[in-house]
Length: 353
Image (cartoon, rainbow, N blue to C red):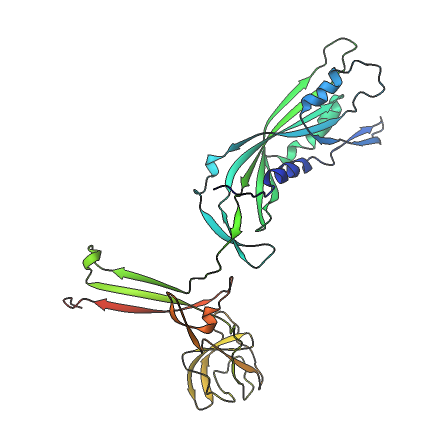
């Protein structure tokens, strides 16, 4: 059941959260309002208790520098499943690999909430107010972080980071040997997703689909049956099958024109000239009548001598599909292929129409 995989989702979420608070500065101004000092507040990963212990447990109070303030620290303090964002149970989906043209299969991501605490420590109240005021306006109460959660498929999601709580502590009481420190603790929740393992998906493409419709409530003894069959059809010549060339220049509106040799062209089939797909309605000698710009291709001008490529002119047999054109059998992943379909009625001998 279990296999090794590591998308670094938790690590990337922690790093992305920390980068939100990079570059926060405090400024000191003189009586004229001129800035004479600007300090960037250092940020580190770790619990605030270690920073407090460094201040409180140092026996030498005469050290020149005990700890420089202001300072910020953050840490991941919890992770929990978020049932309110549940999508489905163990359902997988296909996606294109970011680095290769292959399809990969992965499970639907599972929603999890990650709890963070941001601790802010300052000596002066004005320093604390400057820091907090640079943070709070961005959370109303959430701020979206765009994180590449699954680099294999290039899945980027907006992860809301919600500010849920703010606690303040000012230890201003004490004797002259006690150092005053202001503590603000901000609690955040990041609503992220965890992806399971990814694996190479099968490259088999469904070439034919059949749907049967039965009448009546008793499906075992249905008197009538309607069957619809749809076969995937290639929109280009994978075999590069050049059947002839144009014998004249044609405009984007020309529907009847002459080719050098129409022997290899069949009515009710598709041809390709340049980037345009055409449907052959009929042919007389070397003149053919076509429908222009089929399957969302654009009707264009073409010059005499241009290659005319045939699609599905030769056939092959595939298991569970039957006879199918060679080009349709070679349809690639991601091809926006078309469909050929037809209906078949089956009526019981004792039924009336």
